[in-house]
Structures are given as C-alpha cells and as structure tokens.
Image (cartoon, helix red, strand yellow):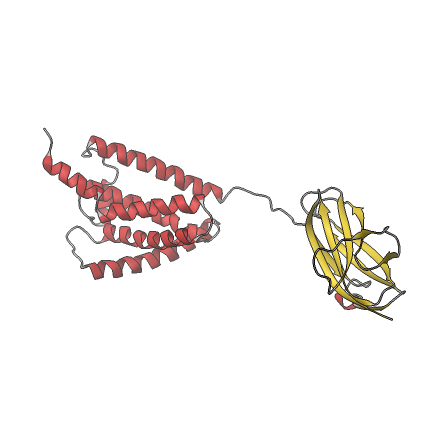
Length: 300
C-alpha cells in the first residue's frame, strides 16, 4: 500500500528550494571544472554563491523560524558574502590558488549538509547542533532516498577530493622563446635607428631558448616601411657584415639548451636611402615562435 503522506513529503523535498539550491551548486561545480571562463559560467557562479548562502541559512534558522521572502533573500545574500570571504581565506590557508573555484570549498559542504538535513526532517531546516547529531542517521530514510543520498555523497566526495588534489599537482611551467633587440652596448639607447648608406651598423639579437631546445632559425628581413601587399623577399648570404637591400632576407641556425640565452651580433650595410623595418623572427619547425622589429632610417 502506498503511503500517500510519505509520497507527498518526498515529492515536496525533491522540489524544495533547498534541492534547487543544491543542484545549482553542483551545476556550477561541473561547469567550473569542465569549461574555461565564459558568460554562462559567471552567471551560474553568481547563482551558486547565493545558493550557498541559502543553504547555510536553512541550517541555522531552525524549523520554527519563518521569514518573509525579502528576509530570506537579504539573509542569504549576507551569508553568501560571508562564506565567499571565508572560502578565499580557507584557500589561502590550504595553499590553494584563490579563484572563482574557491567558493566550492564551502558551497559543496554546506549544500550537502542542507540537502541531507532537509531529507532528514522533510522541512526547510533545523538548528545546526541538531543537524550534526542526526546527519549520519539514515535509519528512517526510505529505500529510494538512501540510494539518492548515497549516490550524491559519493559523487560529491569524489568531486571535492579531485578539486583539492588538482591544487597539489605540480605542473611544470612552459618557458616561451623570445627575442630582444638591443644596441651594441646591450642597451636600447644604442640601437641604430639612423645610419648613413654604405656604412656599417651593428645590433645585438638576444635570444631566449624556450622549454623545447633544438635548432632554431634566426631570420632577418629588411622591408620598406611604406611597402604594401604581400612582399616577396629574396635571400642574401649571412655574413659579417651582411649586405641588405629592400626586401632582403637572411638567416642562420642557432641552438642552445632550454632556458639559456644566446646573443647574436648582427652587422649590416644598407646602400639605399629610405625608411626601413628590420624584422627578426625565431622559427622552429617552420613556425614563427618569437619575433621583434625596429625602424631604421638610412640617409645619404
């Protein structure tokens, strides 16, 4: 024989605001751990913060205390702010990065306690001491409730443990390659930006080798500053000095251990008057991984 009263109370529990708040928290945990920053994640995150405050209110307000909608919203918002701050402090104390995920440290436990308490009492909450005493008592749960609660507890425990373990995973930093263009004395002040045609100028290309060592190509191109469209470059031989003209391209192979710095001294001569852009590219496996450039004016 079906217990109509129990069925009604079970249905009310499944559709209660506490259950909705708990589901919002779980939805945010899933979205936050599976996607990057986006608008939907931010909206669900704000809702999860408020849901955390509502769950905390349901635990501390007691079953006999009745509030208006405005009072519930105000108190839930206040508790949400308080618990969000506490989540950030807890993250710092545990050595975890403080981010929007920090709110899950308290949101998941408070949501779990609230939903278990609501299932236990079929009400919106009893005072916290009574919740602590009865939270592990499953003797009066119906069979379906026990399956649901056990499944939720297992899923939440795994998710929370995974979240905490992620913070302790040591992921090595990936060092990017780079090029700095400096003058002969190693400072930007001496970088040649003006020269007379037919004379020799010099600059230093300081190359930082990234995390993936190997042979890299240092490519240098000379382009007129007013060039338009697709410029077709012609190769010239790397030398000391290298003779450059408009649309010239030269290069040499450089190699070094990961994290090391190389300095290539580049001497060049330009025999044509004009305003040029000298571009430097660092190429690995046909792809440009770092670049830099500067403007040079050649006068007669």
